[in-house]
Amino acid sequence: MGERQMFLHADSRIEPGLLKELVTVVENGAAWGCATLEFDNQAIFYIILSWFSNLRSRIFNSCYGDQAVYCRRNFYYQIGGYPDWPFLEDVEFSRRARLRERGRIITAKVTSSARRFEKQGRGKTLLLMQWIKLLFALGLSPQKLIMLYR
Image (tube, rainbow, N blue to C red; front, side, top):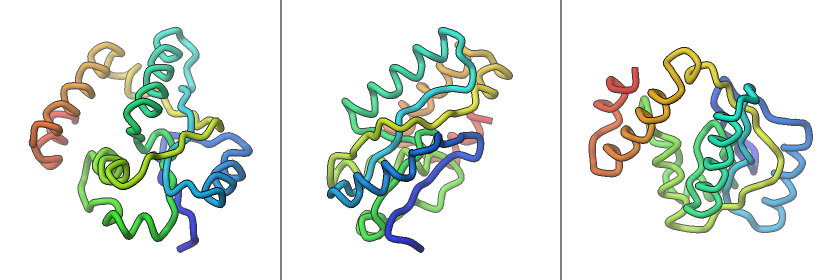
């Protein structure tokens, strides 16, 4: 395992230059953070959704796997790494990380697939994701919430 880790959803792609920026910010002291999100569909819905996701990351320091979460290896172990969960492991990792240190959002972009939104409906998928995050914050387990997600 290298000195820097990056965690990325399988349906996301990083732009050229992202790894270089990631290395630079970590070498300059950042312990963790994520990239700037965009979607592979340029409909206004996705432009607005990515804008709010990026705003959430910057204000609340909350980074998810579709945003290419990165960290220093020692920081990963200090906060207990990613939990061995079937779902929401990135949300929990981000929660633990921001309790220790503010993350750094890099300007390089990661492009995430809009497939799930298109298949299941944009509004329905967005509301479901927010509902799941709320239930998780209230204490429901990822093992139960994954059934709702599927």
